[in-house]
Image (cartoon, rainbow, N blue to C red; front, side):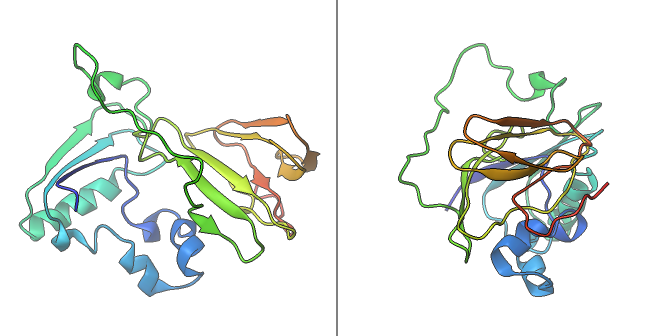
Amino acid sequence: MYKAGVALSGPHDARYFNLGFVETYDGADNPEAWARASNVDLADRLAGRLLLIHGEMDDEVHPDHTLRLADRLIAADKDFELLIVPGAEHTFIDSLAYVYSGDGGEVSAWIRRTDTPPEITHRSGGTCEYIATGDQTEGRFGLYRWTFGDVESGPDPHFHRSISEQFYVRSGQVRLYDGRGWVMAGPGDFLYVPPGACTASAAPTARPCC
């Protein structure tokens, strides 16, 4: 069991953010699964030390997520620390001094081995590997490797308000939605999606969301 943890810009309750994060594992329209994945509902089970950090101007994951969790932790008489960074957005790009202010380096690097099992395996045979999540990189970026099966699958058209997405095809062919229509991408092709732009990948019945 971990003795200490840090949550940076955390979406602590999918019911107020993106249910897809929970439904990927537990299926759609499952309120019990949403509650099981809610840190707010699990606040009374906290053991060890916890630091909550959130940017005041975060428009990707509203600071309300962290404040609601803090309120529940107080009600459960749990000991924790809270830092709300003035003017900071979701990835703390202009507030990096709050992320690390030491004078020297430290031992904090990590490696993900190539034989690590995929985090998600779809019925179609496709997989998704979490190479580096936003939590692991403290909100700086997320890196995921999708391997599609014989049946096309992937996220429906969507957009993000304050983060970008990049798609790089390593092998085979993938259908990508660039905001204007579906295009077929092959090995070496790259798609950049700025904040606010619509995108999707290999969704068989997808339609534009904006």
